[in-house]
Amino acid sequence: MAPPKKDRWVEQFISYLEVERSASPRTVIAYRHALERFRAFRDREVAWHSVTVSEFREFLRGIAEHLASGRAPTASDLRVLNAALMVPARQKLVQRQNGFRAEALPVRFGWPWILSRIAASLADTLTQFDRERVKICANDGCRWAYYDVTKGKTRRWCNTRTCGNRDRVRRARAAAKRAR
Image 1: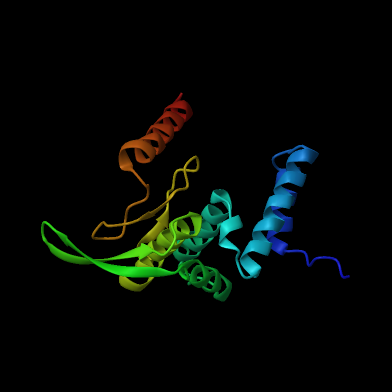
Image 2: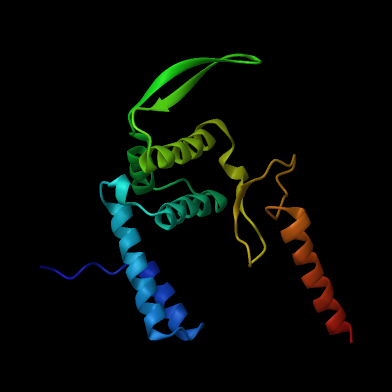
């Protein structure tokens, strides 16, 4: 059997951990294992009952980073997203205060249903909203994905009161320190 194909991005990240971050060998092994599991998760038909929260979050994060950098999701991303959406559901008409609404209900509740609803939210964003407005927080300590609703598409932080304020304070303190 041939050895697994090495992923250039994984190898660069592992090298960064070893050289720049001086990560311990155990940490490097753990990261390598997690990244290999995630790549296998992305490259195969997904058994949704075995996907962990962190694996799915990393998958969504990858799509958000693609969108934030102006790129479309890859064919592999769409294959995984479509697989997540393939959970059996039925429609039910419900009356609310403001009228009627059709709701999707799972045939069977569980983890695959939860993942499918999160995937459906991402699919709605891709189909109904401006992909250019999906951004990554400029705060290096946060890096959350968010949807920029500003008129000029100029928002830099997920939340201006927390991440934006921290960033402004950090820059002001650095400027004061340089001025001394």
